[in-house]
Length: 135
Image (cartoon, rainbow, N blue to C red; front, side, top):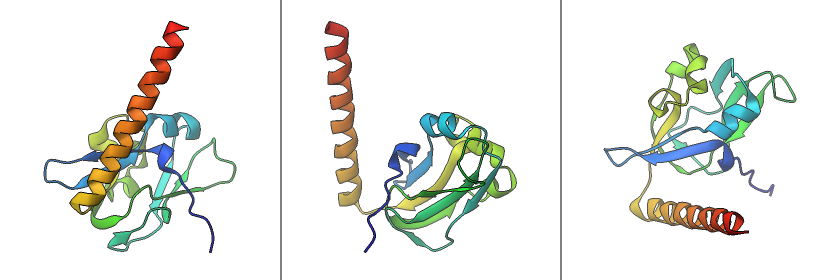
């Protein structure tokens, strides 16, 4: 069995008011890939799984014509942001209202596990920053 591909570094994740979870392209990804000119969904299934093909993008900074990014999370798809198919420039925006890709539903335990991972990452990053500033 092939190892899971971890593209989570390219995405932001946020809980919406209705308890669902939105995923979008983050600033680091936009810097690395440059201006994205095309977006297609690699699946149209109602479930997505962590590490599965998620979206395909076209941009000038990718090695080949297209780059496949892999889902950073598992969950039941509530809604795909299909407007990206017709207006791919929206994914280049830093505005999360415009650049989200998919909205998913996760059980509470999965969300809490993810939230604790994000807090640990933030604390570790903050500690590194403080240590750097002191040194």
